[in-house]
Length: 259
Image (cartoon, rainbow, N blue to C red; front, side, top):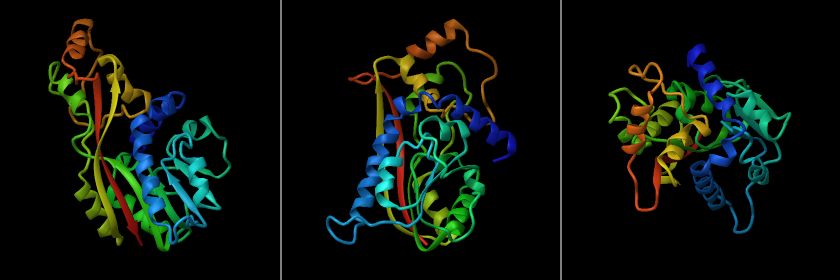
């Protein structure tokens, strides 16, 4: 990212530091899938495989810290937002940095765990090169990422207001796999799921993205200025409703890579 983009993204996540854990419902679903995959990788039934040094990339408020500690003797969290890092657990083992330029030496990490973070990379090619650089030989990456097709309901609602972009353009799972292979990784496992967060009102559904800090839209056609009351009511009125409420759906890709 450019310095301005990094600053803006960090600001969005910093503002959401106090509300992130309460609203990170889909992130928790994705984390459960990643931890299920980690459990499947045990060499023996009932024996947990330990990784000497584990990097929790895009760790936010250390949401998965306690679960990850069961897989490593040395935990390191990394996030773009210093406020996120300090909001829950004040860990000395954390670093504030851009994921595309990791402030880590080469060949020092055994496992990179990253949940709902790499979609914020400005250069996936550079990101996977960085992950390859910091990993030891035979090191692994297990991650989830938001994919193209996410937040379709929000897109539909905004189409009633303007033609601007209100959702970031995400990559496909195939594209992410190719970036990883280009960096030198072997793709061990992929999976794609539709994960849904559900609310009892359109307003709550729309605001949910801001509550987790994911409201930094990088697009050439961003709307300028505030939305009037009439337009805002039209926006809410066009938010699609499912039989059970107002959905916020995410297409989520899962990858396991080996150096």
